[in-house]
Amino acid sequence: MAARLAAQDITVSPSAWVFPDNPPDQMPFLRHRLEPDIPAKLHNLSDIGYSTHDVFVDDKGMVLSAAAHATTPAFERDGYLQQVQGSASISAMYHPARRAGKPVNSQIHFSVIFNPASASAAGPDATPRLLDAYAVVDPNWRAVASDPSIHQRVVWATVSVDEAGRPTAVKDAPRDVAALLGDGVKPWKFAPARSGGRPVAQDVRVPFIVAESDLAKDTTPPRVIKQRPPVYPFSMRKSRLRGEVVVDFVVDIEGNVRQPFVARSLNPEFNAPALEAVSAWEFEPGRRDGVPVYTHMQVPVYFAMRDTPEGGYDPLVVERSGRDSTLPEDLRVDVEPKIRGLLSPVYPYELLRDGTRGSAQVNYVVDSQGGVIASRVVKASRPEFGLAVQAAVERFEYDPGLKNGRPNAAALGFQQDFEDYGPLVSNADHRLLHLEAKHPERIAKLADLDTPPKATVTRSPIFPRSLAGKVAKGEALIEFIVDEDGSPHLARVVSASDPAFGYAAAQAVSMWRFDPPTSKGQGAVVKVRVPFVFKPVAQ
Image 1: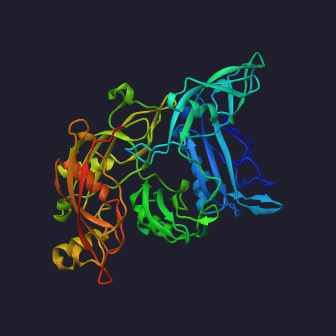
Image 2: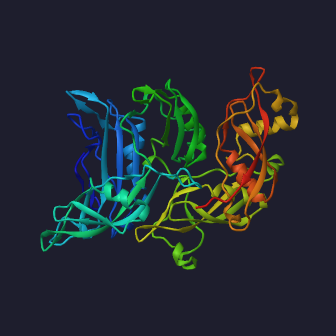
Image 3: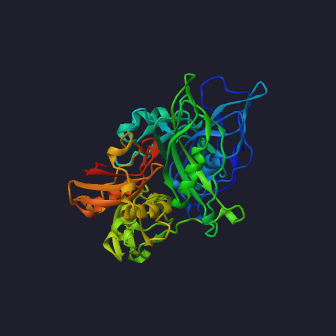
């Protein structure tokens, strides 16, 4: 990998062996030059930014595992991290490391640094220039209770850099991580500040990434031995859309994929083929201290049209909920939020059963962390449609908007059409509706099953943002049908202390998965009821 890339003053550090001893004779290097970029509106950033990458490359050049972090989503939104991690899930991206001439597994670190103009390598005067950075691992990391998918936070502190470019102290750090930052900055590299062409000591304000535990030295991740790319859905070819689905799964000690589910998706139409592809993959199991172990993994699966520029079009266009002139100053951004994950609303059961069509629009606020913190139904042909869209929107995930180069809250809007023969309703939904109406006796009762239904994947419902601060708790009872494959369908709100609790619970149920139910050894469909209790979660 080149030590420098000329693009918006971007520096890519050389690949480094992550362990303290026994590096290979030759480090792995990329087969193709990477060309990172950031939005034009960010070319005048005044702060340092960076992304860090710890990558496990096997002896065939495949990226098997990667821990990547960025100080702001602006530094990954143009596909750079996808180049490092994602495309390698299908084909070898690296020339592997070599020891004594033979290819070997390796684990490397590198960082991508975005320095401001004040740190330019040219000219007699400059602020300290960051050359390499590392995420700071917090051994006592606790995921945010309201969102366990958050694996890092960014904190700011002042670093003292001496005349040789060595970081000597960290000041003004948050008290709970001050000691961690003091130790974590030691391997960082800087070019010293300059005054009149001479190096001088100077303080510089930098962001630190505080993350959960990194890849472990005594752990070898699973190695793929059979993998086929996903099939682009024939029904989507006319749309020419591209998309990304992040699939979460476990590789067991025999190398089989277990409990796959969609952790995040840019287009729900791609969810089923992504799950089908990943479910068929085979691995050499991961090992800890040489012993096969169950290994939790997440992989991005990409869908693109080969004969379309840039692989197609994004599935969702971000719309502001109002003009800049009408928005409060704290909701105005220079760069719009970018969607990372969306969900299809659950079609209200009674309206689907009766063939009722309609639409709804919800306006909402995305905070500086990319989460939806407030929402409001602005129009709906039926109240149930508004509640369903609101429940889905509140689970959307974004790269936050940017203002003056820093994450900022933004106001957006989303509209959904409900059609009983549209994309929100699957063939399985129609089959089960017919079965329920014409042959209810074919739907098994819980007592008829060989074993009680076992949920292999569950997602907790979100306390509705519209009710936060208004009620202290809530309840809902949801009924749904589990099909022969273990997928839930036709979620219905039986009762709820507030309708918003009912639709939040129904949205969560749509993401569950079960062991396929059987009755007398044969595949069965079964109707299930699940109660939910809502309590506000402290942020």
